[in-house]
Image (cartoon, rainbow over all chains, first blue to last red; front, side, top):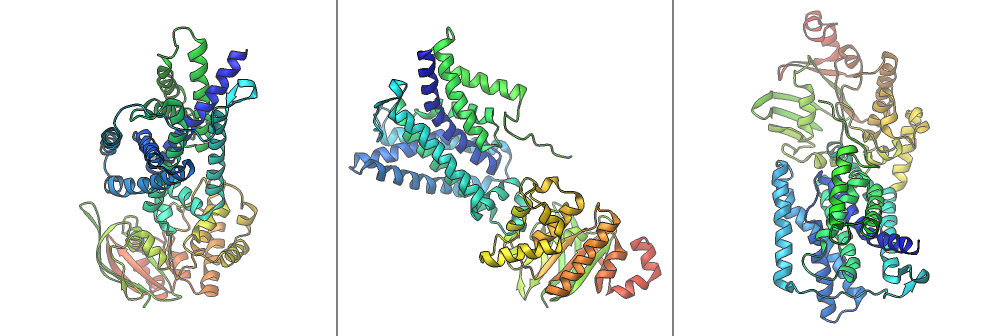
Length: 291
Length: 235
């Protein structure tokens, strides 16, 4: 029982990061109808930026804030420079662009900061909480994710800009007809997704250590969470992320033969199962289009 | 002249849909585009809003708007109620109205305008928190018109406002459109299959056939011309 609870809590903590990544994936999916395969590499690059700033002597929170802002701007630029010109092109063009972005970010991070594993600090420390069930950093991962979700909810429900972004995502042509600059809303979505990814990267880095390939598995779990919750539902994606974290951890501990080595397979099995039996996810809408 | 179009050609890919079309609408006027299916009526509205490829001259207040992006034309004060209404189905009625005014900034005026829309369309007030997709066809059309008015437009483009509505609802809608025109002085360009109704509301009509304007006359003249009525308007 003790072990079960402990593993579930640890799963909840990593699940928070998957939830962040799932949220970032869904934000871009809503705007452009494609999965951003480079989401993880964008987050990794952001994390390296904050690491570099700290290496130059800046305090944690300043480096944190700077990385979030730089990532937001970077996300907007990626949309404007790379994806705007091909937004009407067939799906394969976008796919190639995503893979290109993935390799560019991955290799440049390796080139600039090399592939040795670096440790990344946590401002929350690792003191045990709840009698050792969870530590302070893990609790912070959950808290920050929930806070982020609440902020996004307020932004999308309570502000005119948020309303405009929802309108642009739900019907681009109608959005243009009320005067919304849909292209900029898409860019804004990219910026926000990049910023969310940056937060996720900086929170997970103390756990998985910092290196150019750190986000590969995390993004897969993020995809699994997003698919499980439904790619059209931000709230569902977050729940999906948490669920995947818990499933991953419990299966790794309690299902024989899975262990650490086969954990990543669980994410893939989950994706395939959801796509087979409930393609719109647990909370998503299935879109019916008239021909 | 507020809107002046001359020598307008429009294209869908290789296919030309409009040929040297010319017409105009001035402040406060209501004009209508009539013609059979496929005559190019909807294409004219889409061309005005930069939604199809065009050549030719379209001017709004003397500024050339050919080739402009949709959102820039809208920001000049051109509101378009498109075919199929263009409602945001998953958003609430009130959010749809808010979106109509998304380019405006004075919150008090926007709130006052929403109240005015509710006064014109009481049914929308009752359903203000419902998702727009749950409204009936007539309510959705009223929402679409209300959303367009939230822009405080100078020109309202209406594409088949009577489409799919029960006759009583259509009469109600057209009565409200007339009232809005006299109260606010917003000009209207209406595309309608129901020619009798459109000719009643509009003072001037353009008759289209396969992308050409074949007649350009006051509504009374067109309504009185039996040959035209029989061959083009079907009533």
